Length: 87
View 1 (cartoon, rainbow, N blue to C red):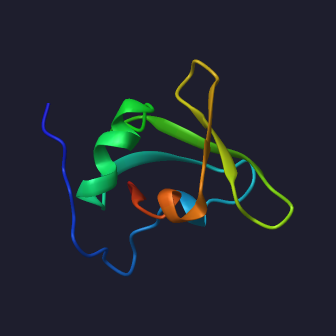
View 2 (view 1 turned 90 degrees about the vertical axis):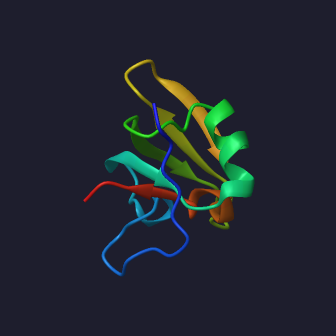
């Protein structure tokens, strides 16, 4: 399996931080090569379905539900911005 990295996001490309509460998307690729290994180890693998579960009162961190397993992950908004979604 090849992991795709991008250096610049097209204007139509959405990231996980752009999701609204309860909204889902499928991970397309990871934008930051330095953070990619950390995110991959936490289950943010291209092709995985993600759903925004909650946001902290001040907006950061956010919690995501990954896949069908109901695996919950908390991320900083800056980390979520590096996870791009399929259109």
